[in-house]
Amino acid sequence: MKHFLYWHAGTRLRRCLLFFSLLAPSFRIVAQGVAINETGAAPAPSAMLDIASTTRGLLIPRMTTAQRLAIAGPAEGLTVYDLDAGSQWVYAQGTWTLLAPVPAGAILMRTAREDVKMAQAGYSFLWPQVISNGQTSLAWQTPPSLTGAPAARAGHVSVWTGTELIVWGGADGVSYNDGARYDPVLDTWTPMSATNAPSARRDAVAAWTGTRMIVWGGSDGTVLNTGGVYDPATDTWTPMSTVNAPSARFRHTAVWTGSRLLVWGGSNGASNTQTGASYDPGTDTWTPISTVGAPQARSLHAAVWTGSRMIIWGGQGGFLTIYANGGLYDPVSNTWTAIPANPAISGRYECPAVWTGDRMVVWGGLGVTNAGMFDPVTLAWTPISLTNAPATRQQHLAVWSGSEMIVVGGTASGAIVNTGGAYNPATDTWTALPLTGVPVPRRYAVGNWTGRAFVIWGGETTGNTRVQDGGVLSIPTSNTYYLYQKN
Image (cartoon, rainbow, N blue to C red; front, side):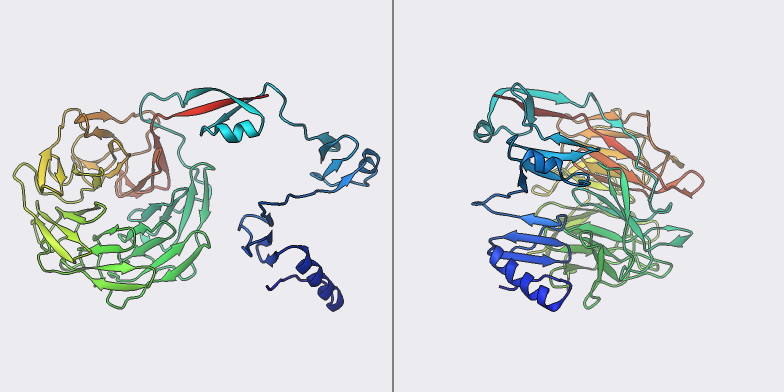
């Protein structure tokens, strides 16, 4: 096994390497820290010292009380074990402080019930306690900080990583190829590296793979067929291959299947297309999507991933052509199944759709007043209620919260709005979004569901002015905590 350590001079280096080789079964020093373990694993990226063992513990310096008190100029945070007192002590704010154990009778809350572990730690189970955040309905929270936020823009892309909102690209007079990552817990922005990033663009597509963001296509005045893969863990970009990539386009759609990015449709600025391709980020390769049985060429359409198939529906064809049909694409068999038009559901474009887990919900779009849910198994549409629904609109945002479709913003009757609503398909009912604390009206914004909140950012407001702010719409939450008392 190799061991790495850097020291001042040759003799000391050899002695130190020998010492640490004998110290533990595995000792590794790499740029990010030190690992001591029995498996040869590298240290965790966030740790300077990472010690792991299931059979041995860590001994900190041990000394008598007199020896502890005789330490000259102890550093803030210095920790020792006092043999006389039989306890650990830390030097904090100019004095030695006992690290006291949890006193008997103290109450501890846990989000999971683990009787055995808590009993082993000297705790007794009391009872479960439900704690709510105090909300009774959807509510707008404190908007994201502007410190370090990207410049105002529209036509940008975003993904939710599980912990951060990544915003990239877009335009405000000029196109951008920069962006930032927003942490809603810390309310902080972290700039993204531009090294090897795709060229500046707007109207691209983006998807989150589980570890990386893929950005492809768009326009900077010239339509593009390039893209990049961004890794937030290393803040690095990797350019995507253009071999067998789809032709240059914008106003297209993309869905992530769990292993591949499916790109389809869009416009090259002169005409629309019915072509597409599947991108594998693991091999950096493109595979064309069959055009046999594919929907007619279109742009500004809706697309969702069902878990096994991509649904394409609606959109704009040639001049004054609006589609009310679509197709189901199966990437395993590389085949299409037609979705015929339904007289009850009007054709539309600039209309996002959401996937509920078994249905696609379509609401809004240019010039329509009806809406519906599509079942990909039966190929049947079910109209949805419009009672208490927001004013019809296009260019809005829509997300699925796990129980409701939430829509906000967009253009309604020629005006950019900040109203919205939440649709519950289980009850076929709408609830208006609150106006207290609502962000300024906007269209062409981005928005993602975090699991507890709808975070929106950027876009274009009244007067075609790009905005640099956003909003956080949260749902009522409650957690069950399990209470334990120290014996």
